[in-house]
Image 1 (cartoon, rainbow, N blue to C red):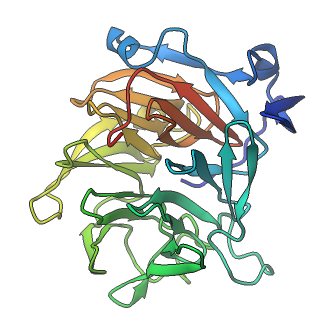
Image 2 (image 1 turned 180 degrees about the horizontal axis):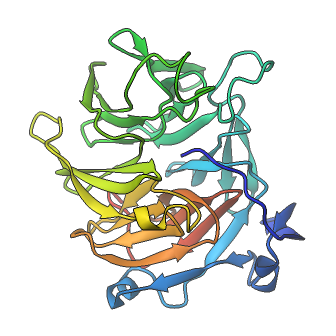
Length: 349
């Protein structure tokens, strides 16, 4: 999703990152709640006792690092124990590791054109993925493509057009167990969301098969964004970050990998504009519970669409990812990278 700057009351705080301390601008509430090595923010709002089975009652939202312009697209690298994430506006991919802190991993991350005039408000990479070989795949806003970072070399373009017309600005993606990549393509990374240089008159959800064939799965969503499979891969969830229809949809995945007719999984349109954020990135745990960022934070839904609670960061929360041993949920919340230690485990761990 794209970021709209907001004013906030703040004060200065040093955030310890292992042996590194970064000067950050954080709300006074963060300073007051600092515990252990990391400050904490927000609260965990519990609507159903079943949430206690997923997130301990004493769980905190820890702030690991801050000062980012718009944190997005987190992914965990199991091989190195590293969290990669995008700073979309700054056009760079970051890395964070326990005890080492945060540093720039790739710059530029999603736009390789001239710096002047400025291309767009959000030129960098957004959603990140790791393939089966441990290679980083980026949804690149500015270069309007999916790319893969080759081992010991540079990037290679996976796809940048549909039937000869350039993609809008790939936003987020997920990888099926067979290696196919499913991704969304809203216009948030373009200089303007309507008109040139936009070439497609719709915002699509696509599948890029391992043989390189690109299939348009649906063009019926106005602003498709976050995307995730259920553990059995029979359902594909897609967020729509349209304030006029702020929803998550669930699509049945057919035997050939295409989608059947989608249905609304959950509707938060009444909260759009009243709480910070819109439906955005999401992940699923091994039991099929959906952790989906949206207005007010990160929602937790049961597989049948019942809201169990919400992780409330107090900021526009854009995306999440499982990490460590699969029990830690990392959150991108505007300028913050946060984590919550859970008692569940991400799908695929």
